[in-house]
Length: 475
Image 1 (cartoon, rainbow, N blue to C red):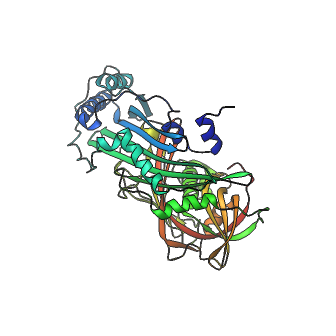
Image 2: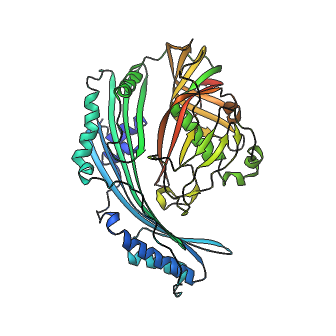
Image 3: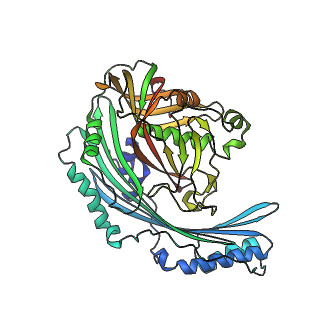
């Protein structure tokens, strides 16, 4: 029987970015001029559209994006690079009765004008004041040589060469470099904004067979900036390799309530899921959520402070303005355990999808602990798989790849695969006693209706307590 690469990747449970890199995704759109070369033209088209909407007695906002998605990957079967380009325009018209939208993928003068006519008809454009264009941020223009397929593959291969001599027990090894380059324009009365969002993710994956199950280990980095701004250290390469090769302890895991250390990737998964499900302005419209998460209510211990801050320099989930045209500001969500805010800013998947409140760059405040394993007895949970949060009850199920036993601040060598942490979210947050000074940044990119969503979480290791058991759910 012949197995395709797509079947192999799906069987290993790897992200779709690998399949896209190896040519399993949609064909790329033809190239066009670089966005900065026609920015002035786009601004003029959007201004005309907003003026037409105002001429019909409505209030208008125009959002446009020209973005590319490039993925280079190398695995045990070969290497590949794939490119995708997408353009889009969203015109919004508001009046006392509500709002209407017109969305098109035709980022041309004719396409924008047609979208405006769909909202405003043949109304005479109004004379409105847009003000001077806001100066664009000082984002270095990408070097075309760095984006050449050969250069991207060389960048991925260079990391693989540093991790030479992989064990024969490693059955799958891969590296990935993913680049999202988006130019975004936002035009409204008294507002003319432009930003370039250049997001980069690197990832290495190692899989080794352990008994009857594959053990997967991944290390990733995500940031905004140049392709070579960050890379993996030798310790990270060794971690990915050694974790995949670690032998799991035979026998069943002893379910029970334990002292825990939650690794940054696990913390990031919990915070991301809880924020999107419970701590947004849209979620607060549900009576059962509003009652449980009223302003100033204590929902965690004093060690829990959380801020959504898209203004952090070089943050993977950061931006200068959101997709509703509002300038970026930091929003405190939890202050020493007390709920003090909700996310209301509007973001669109791919900048053209349905407007929704969504986190950007979440910062979990670090603590005072110098050691990530400051436990007398318990488990270190690492390797985030998925998190389920029930909005009706706050029940949370956190699926992780490994639980590592800790005694007197040291790992014992016992390791258990496919574990989950279950319980109430507020009880889990209330059990947190300390966090490490050191933090890690986790970049998340997933799809909503085929459009990408970007966000990031800066998280420490957390000391907590909870019910841990062998994995039962499909979280």
